[in-house]
Length: 124
Image: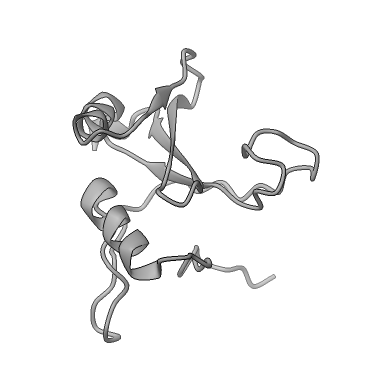
C-alpha cells in the first residue's frame, strides 16, 4: 500500500490571518507562509501523532473546537520561560508520561496549542 510521507501543510481559517501568522513566527518560531515555492518552514524529523477524537471529548478544549496542533519542542522548560516572559499564559502538565511532558496555551484567536517535549528529544 502506498502511504503518505508526512504532513505537508496545516491550513486553517483565522479572523486575522496575517497577524496570527506573525504571532506564530514571533512566539513559536514557525516561519511565515512562503511567498514563493522555494521557501518554507523546514521541520526537524520526528514523531507525529494523527489522532481523531470523539466529538464529545473535552481534550481539545471548547466543544466547538475542531482541532489542536501539537508542536514538538527541544526544551519545554526554556520554551515555557520564553512564552511567559512574553506575557503568555502557559499551563505545564504535572505528569511526566513515558513519551514526555506536555504544556498548553492558546493563540490570540483561542486555538489550542500543545507543546510536547518528546522523551529523548534533548539528545538530538
